[in-house]
Amino acid sequence: MVEIQCPHCEEDIELEDDVFGLFVCPHCDEEFLWEDDDYDEDVSNFENNGSNNPLMIIVGFFILLVAVIVGFSFDTMVGVMAAIVIFGVGIGVLFAAGIMALLRK
Ligand SMILES: [Zn+2]
Image (tube, rainbow, N blue to C red; front, top):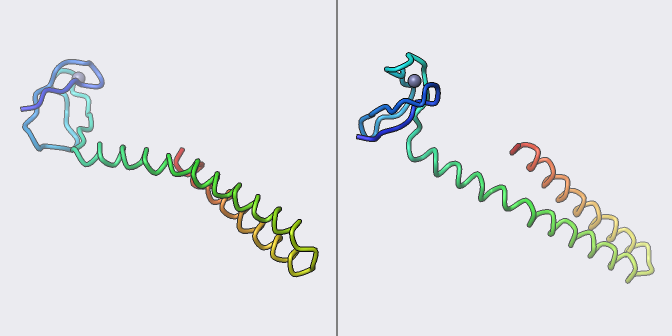
């Protein structure tokens, strides 16, 4: 048996092990959701994915830095074009990181 608290009336409710889903509280007749252990794993994975975003932003800025260095290193049209392309990739990575951060909220 597992003992949980009703989210509505905060009375203790006893449930069988390994039963999950929607239950009706015997004390207040309100429905509540009791999730299984996989839910907790999803939450921790979710947090792990979230921590990847700062890394993506660092990588994005690094690519922008490389673009600036390339742009100043080559005094030719090819160098400028390469810098613009690398700059675009950096912006793309930052944009993707921003979109992913927004989607997770
Ligand atoms: Zn209740």
